[in-house]
Image 1 (cartoon, rainbow, N blue to C red):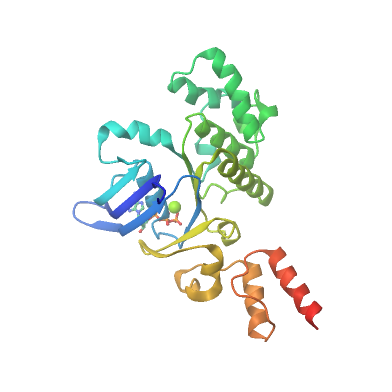
Image 2: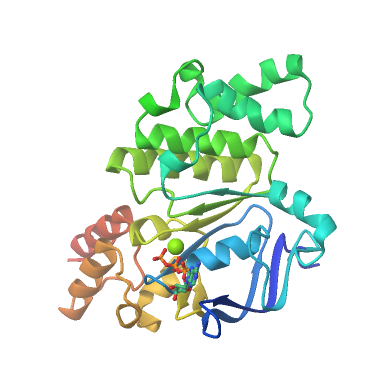
Amino acid sequence: MPETPLIEMRGVSYSYRRGEAAEVAALQDIDLQICPGEFVAVVGANGSGKSTLAKLMNALLLPTEGEVSVSGLSTLQEEYRWDIRRKVGMVFQNPDNQLVSTTVEEEVAFGLENIGIPTDEMRQIVPEMLGDVGMGSHLRDEPHNLSGGQKQRVAIAAVLSMAPDCLVMDEATSMLDPQGRADVLDVTRRLCRERGLAVIWISHFMEEAAEADRIVVLNRGAVAADAAPRHLFAGAVELEDMGLDTPAVTQLAGEMRSRGFSIPAGITETDELVRAICQLYLKT
Ligand SMILES: Nc1ncnc2c1ncn2[C@@H]1O[C@H](COP(=O)(O)OP(=O)(O)OP(=O)(O)O)[C@@H](O)[C@H]1O
Ligand SMILES: [Mg+2]
């Protein structure tokens, strides 16, 4: 039996009102399913509709047409919205805009308080959650003294305190240095693997997207492709026409193929290319 989707979009369109009459069609006729525990990357050029898609997933925006449901609950029904926002947690781009408390532990406790967790239970859960994102030794730190990557990990812990089924990371690494980016991606992947959280990873770093189970490509508000990274990067979809790169290792593999080396299509990881090159030498 097919798995019940965690998030389902059916015929979803969204237009922003601009001024009196003009409307901006940000998304058109999107059909998309996200299953529990999946790690799905969403990529697309600036303005292609990624953030709009993210906000539709947790009822921050409501579709102009069509329907979005989370665990079978439609975002159009007002009585489900609180539940839906708990189930689908969001982390945004700017780490400085998401933390509101004076210490790291308060930041996480705030969410727990909101859902009525008793104080003594909270004392146990808060360090656990911060430990889960590698911030267990920063409980008493002030958020503004942390690095960007540390702030994003605290933001993730705060979202975890709501016991979500899905994390939506909207370009959550784009303002971070390479170390911060790697740390946030590692933590997110681990939460997906160990806690079975579904992850929507919105990013313009193709190297990051290449690590997802599936990549959804948005182009001018429509789904242009929805495939496993190796299929997408094997060359069937013209990513460059949509303002997107392929990972450097995929480009290098393609360059070698075009020069006659027998390298398989759709390589997305450095290790794979290294193995393919070793194979060539073993054959000669
Ligand atoms: N609040 C708004 N009011 C009017 N138009 C908007 C608003 N927010 C987004 N848009 C428009 O909707 C379209 C999709 O925007 P969206 O922010 O979803 O794209 P995006 O893929 O997230 O872009 P970026 O890569 O820049 O974050 C764009 O044409 C954008 O200009
Ligand atoms: Mg955006």
